[in-house]
Length: 229
Ligand SMILES: CC(C)(COP(=O)(O)OP(=O)(O)OC[C@H]1O[C@@H](n2cnc3c(N)ncnc32)[C@H](O)[C@@H]1OP(=O)(O)O)[C@@H](O)C(=O)NCCC(=O)NCCS
Image (tube, rainbow, N blue to C red; front, side, top):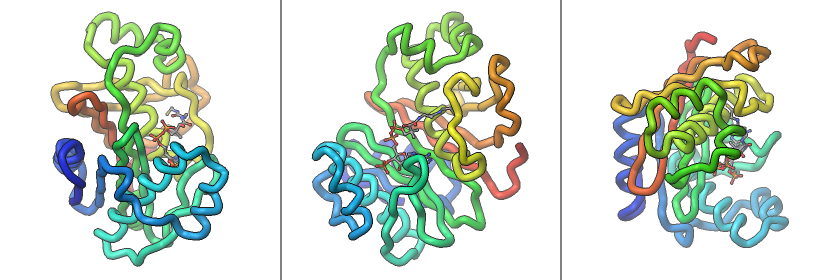
């Protein structure tokens, strides 16, 4: 477990309640704390705008801190296909950044098929954007339940899910292909193929979590070694 001061500790506490102990996590609210990028990472970052370079370095900082907790040697985490990070041999993980906060989850590859984390700003989402992110089934549920932050919670779940299932599917998954159902009391989410887009023949069954901490929404997902599709 590790978190850097103040704002990050409540997020770390959520993750510690949700995730098995063999998933290392690191949350940071201080982009300035990020150390230098490795040569390969720095080459990629050279083409980035300054703000993007800062979040990229902050995410790598969290990822390296989580890797270190698992005893991994300091390593480069280059950018792979579809922007997915390339993890050191024997490990896998997930990175997110949202404003000044960044976070990463890392585990040993023999224990997990995938990990996903997403942190989003809480708040309302306009209807046009909600129609892009949410399926008709999700929108019906939102309208019936009238729950605060629901569209953004669904968004965070889908992004965490996407990162988690990327190593298994290795293809783009559209927001309309998946229905998310959230149990806010338990802070759990379930993902199913949407009725509208049933060409997603295999949707791995992740263990998904989502919660609101202050003005941030946090979603996390993991896929164990024996998860059925
Ligand atoms: C990839 C994506 C989820 C990233 O989300 P985001 O809001 O841009 O940003 P976040 O800060 O939460 O996450 C960014 C990090 O995700 C990671 N990431 C990017 N693409 C990834 C992929 N294909 N697989 C796994 N991780 C990925 C990267 O580490 C990235 O940080 P970095 O570029 O600094 O290394 C988003 O840009 C995207 O493409 N979404 C569309 C697909 C989707 O979410 N479908 C939902 C249906 S399940």
